[in-house]
Amino acid sequence: MEDKHTYEILSNFSGSIFPLLNALLTFFSVILLYSLRITTGVVTVPSFTFTSSPRHYNPQTTIYPALKAIFDGTVVRVGKEGRTLYEQSGYGRPDPEGVKLSDQEALYLLHRQKITLSGYTFNSLFSQFADRPGFLRSFLVYRDLRERGYVVQAGPHDFRVFKRGEKPGTGESLYLVRVLSERDPIRFVTLIEEVVSSRNMRKQYVLAVVDDEEELTYYEIKLQKLAESGNSVPGVMPHQALLVGKSAMVLAAPRSDLEQSGFGKRLDDERLMLAPVELLYLMGKGIIDLKKGGVSVSKDDYFSLALETDGELTEKDKVYTELRGHNFTPRTGYKFGHHFRVYCGKNVHSDMLVHAVEKDTSLPMSAISRSVRMAHSVKKKMLFGAVHINGIQFIEFARIKL
Image (cartoon, rainbow, N blue to C red; front, side):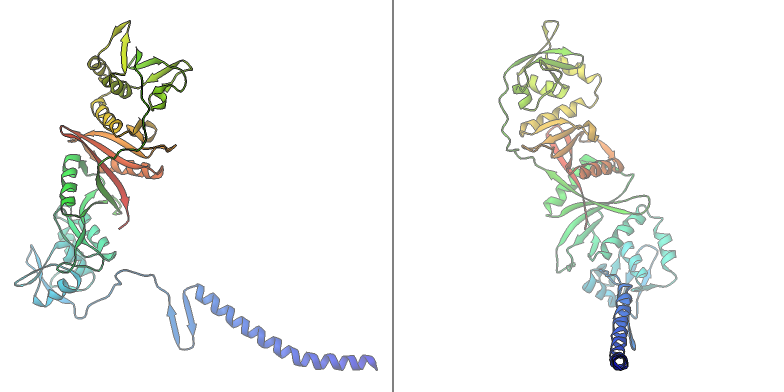
């Protein structure tokens, strides 16, 4: 009797709880399904579909109707109705006939379907313009800057780039951009002149380099005026040194005044070895009396001797002396592929890599790229010390993201 009563209670309970459990299971299944669809980028609800899409500075929109342009074989122009291109987005240069477009602007607008050009498609116009020297890389840079939200116009170098949200007539340009390929040489005297010109116009000078795979890298170029390091240099007493090959050996106890000032490399507990640039600097200051066989060796004689095996010694000596004059501590930068690693204060690690060059020297952009990449990887600045008759100009290269 009791078993029958128990069975009836359980039957009544299951009849009431199971529908509730079934409803909860259905509800959470729907929630799970919606969650999975949201994570894949598509949310589906009755009668509506929303698809997630990446954000662009300039979505690919088409102006209808596209403006008609004319190409006379030299210049692409848009009639007076095209002044909206200039007034709204900073394309072209206004003239009495309408708007005159640069080659890069015309091709870009044709690609974006904002203009039409009778007898030309994007491909055919691209093919024709590409015969002009440097056009391909300049177009790639122009397109990249436009897609990043900048207004771009021809400038004193290749392009002048306006601040985001600003355009000609109402805004101020921010960058002056020079376009190069990875194989183009950098002639330092020309580079210095262009950076000075940009600085006088209160613009930031940028190199836009296009590699063989059409990838772009931007470099900010600055002319650095070295400040005092703030690191007090201990006084160094006069020493005698013995000429050993192209180096010099000084008898000095551990932690000598030379070592504390950042000179030399210890050979053993009694002897300190001086590198050629260190020796030349210390001889010039009257600190080292260099001897060979008991006879004094002059600085000029030693310089001629060291120059026999180091064709860069002239530039290295001048840059080393300049760095020391700012209380910096230059040490060899051979392990980093450069002349000096430079300590600017009391840091354990060096702060800069410096390479000495003659002002008229040209280096391939690929070599400079390797230098900047190396400096960046070890968290140092990359400077080139350009030597000329009026002194030394330090030029800093740094990769930037526009």
